[in-house]
Length: 116
Ligand SMILES: [Zn+2]
Image (cartoon, rainbow, N blue to C red; front, side):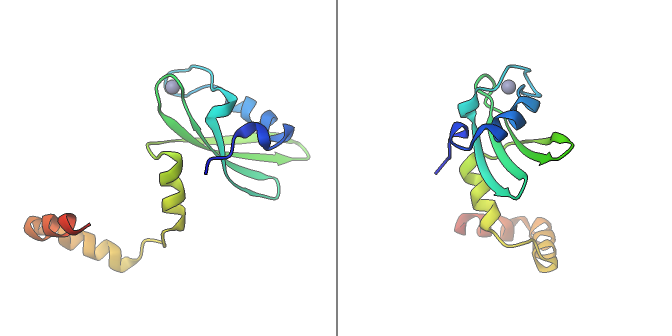
């Protein structure tokens, strides 16, 4: 369930000001477009969807004694998909080998896609 940004306190509001514009269309983000994915000590991971172009970013906001900084990454994942992938296990060597094998055999690839 998405958590509205304004329920997370004024410190996060300061962090969002650093990433207040969409990097793709340069329109301003609305505060309610930001959702908290996770928090750990002074680090906050946010998912923000642009109200104009509908593209999204994942933003890591770090709050320290010397100030607030943020790093953003454009993503095509919506908020629920990010949660889904966070629960998934890490990609293993076997996963990579299996994917490589599937890409070599289109019949097997499409049979596997039909099952999924
Ligand atoms: Zn945009």
